[in-house]
Amino acid sequence: MLPVHLQPESHVPLYVQLRDQLRALVHAGDLRPGDRIPASRELAGALGVHRTTVANAYAELESEGLIQGHVGRGTFIRGDGHGLRITPPAPPVLDGARGIRWELLFADERGEEVLSRLTAAAPEDALSFVMARPAEEFFPVEDLQTCINAVLRREAVEVLRLGPSDGYGPLKEALIDVLRKDGIPVKDENIMITDGCQQSLDLISKAFVRPGDSVILENPAYPGAVAIFNGARARCLAVPVRTHAEPGAALGMDIEALEDTLAANRVKLIVVTPDFNNPTGMSLPMESRRKLLELAARHQVPVVEDHIYGRLYGQEPRVPSLKQLDRGDLVIHIDSFAKVAFPGLRVGWIVAPAAAIERLRVVKQNTDIHTDQLAQASLAEFLKRGLFTKHVAKMRKIYALRLAALDEALRKYMPSGTRWTKPEGGMCLWLELPPGFDASELLIHAKERGVLFAPGRYFYVQNPLPNTLRLSYASMSEKEIARGVAILADLLRAEMKKRERGVRRAERSRVALV
Image (cartoon, rainbow, N blue to C red):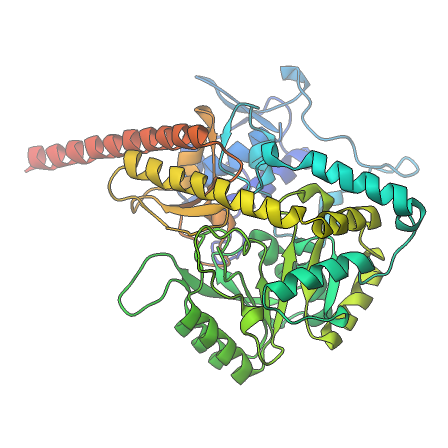
């Protein structure tokens, strides 16, 4: 049997532990090209884990090109004997030395998950619910091109120089105007331009969090935030997100659980997406927002508000953001152009008290000096011409139609026992399979039918529910959404029937024994 040892008590998922250990055995030469490895059922039995754990590890290794399954023969290490390379390019070799074992030098052993892997290995015609990203067919390319040309004619030399770390002045001015219209009183000293919300979270982590500090995150949460605070060696405290109505309990972050967590721990930051939480699509109602700010003030804990989906509301009236409600300078508000349009330009912003912005500016200067000036100048022009407001209004309508198409398809095709959230905007929806089903196992079969989604395991800070998954719909047409849901529902029904037949066989066997 393979020399593999899993640690159930570890925060690293079991399938990730198995994947990484098998990969290390290949790189070390303990497993060689042509070697046969145990079938998933056999290895699962030997390790005392569910077969899906092994199947998930094998699926990722196969996508990396390390192993190959052959029907009727088994699964083998890939190599020249199969006409394929077994390993990545050889690591650097110094002065004839044996070579560096790079995997032994990595500072982080958690094996971070990257959702884009699911899409990278997919065929071009796959129906992908994986990534929460804007619809590329509606990118206002011509409008942006006009803005870029205007900037280059007017100030080409200036925007190609190094710029200030806190951002290009005219873009800050344009954003201040937008924010004031949103009801957020902000001055130049309260705003800084970043390379998007992911960098904003990273800068906040570097500026505020020391190893061992406690940070509250939603559970489930945006994986990028989890990765950043884990990477900072923070103690991540999970507060559950309610996805379905319960008597006396509001949807969204569980405010009672938040209160208990704050009472029991010395917390450095609360990180929350109050509008259309990624991955569930849930939003905090007004009462919960006020209570959250009250708790933050009582315990003197800053709140990081990720507002990246906040403009994609499908219904009026719009609930005020936490920053709009903030009367005590508690909230660090982050946002970006990425979910509205132009994710490739990597431009976002942070709104915070002046003292926090000054500290963040120094951290950013040490990180990357400044954000791309041509991108900033082009987006400033885009804002000043009123094109941003026009485009956001258009995309809200389009995404509302796509969300309605997704909900309709789920109601039409999904079998009983399946539940899903009812977002009022954003880009994603959270689905719960009937108890006992595993979304990762469903994904293996769905890939074969050309459908991809993100299993819920990617999003949990702790206590993952295996029967959950995220469906991101913004970049898919209404027809594609309906077709993808129909395929998923067919696969789920087939699995349910298989289980029912198994139960009936077991019952007949028990009767026969009696």
